[in-house]
Length: 225
Image 1: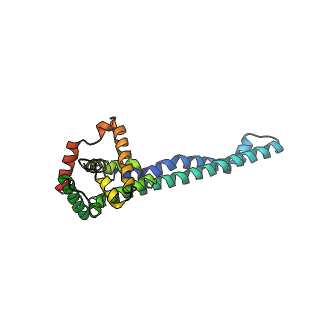
Image 2: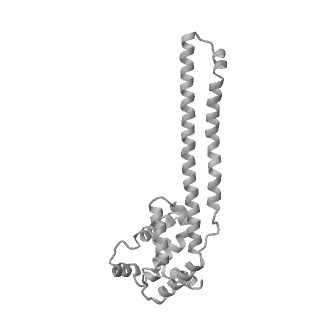
């Protein structure tokens, strides 16, 4: 099921940074104003010379700390928001790759093989490799899991179901390659997306996962690409 809100999250994230900077800017500005109006404050609240010096020193310390904290928070939010924006851009780029002409040709061939019950080989695993890469990037926290769910959950969960019924294609590929780590990132991703999808929809995982009829319909759609 193609996303009808592609790019919406990216546009929303781009507005987060200036909104969050506003209160930080106000705090820092207030601290600087206090610092530059220190003499006026001293005249407003007169004290003896010693107390005045101590009071001024404490004001300077507090203002310095406020400015420093404001700057640190601003930098932290800047980095955090930038990482989320970069994640959104990468997810959309991966989605564009998934929908490219070449990948559609690979998806069409893969769905035909899965519908026929034939064993797939490493020559037919372009879709698996792409999802495996996405899984690695999510697990390493380079991509945001919720953004990936937004764009890929429908495809990943249904392909994962197709790879296991009626034939366990993943097991056969691992045995052929003598490599039990093959597509482990895809397996991890499929389970995480299914868990998130179930939670977001308020369903159990057994209900949220695609059944045989839904997988069959999905593969027929992929075959018609």
